[in-house]
Amino acid sequence: MPFRFLDDIATADVAFEAWGKTREELFAAGADALLSTMVHDPEAVERREETVVTVEDTALDLLLFSFLQELVFLKDARRRLLHPEKVRIAEEGGRFRLESVLRGEKIDRQRHPLVVDVKAATLHRLRVACESGIWRAVVVLDV
Image (cartoon, rainbow, N blue to C red):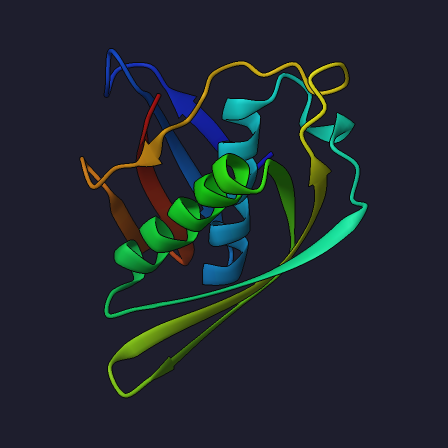
């Protein structure tokens, strides 16, 4: 599990640190942390349906923010819980573009006991950096 929850950052929200050897692994770990925040047992979410998400931004931290916001939107608007299967990040012309293949299913409260309802990712203390060859992020979720 390439993430951990941080108890000392936000008292009314949920914070986590995620990491990976590549930017793509980091973003997948962030998506896993988001799913683990929302659902008691993320592995109970079956990978039945495929969803493709594309987001763009000018900075990696904002790209992560946009990606997580899209996952929260899909949970709220389409009632989908999603695992990241593939993440690809490209940089061109001063912009970053993320394309992600996600797999999951519609929320079933019998099989997916929800822990908290994540309303949004926040910009509070948002950070993405490469430290000693490991990509790391800190994210605070509004719950």
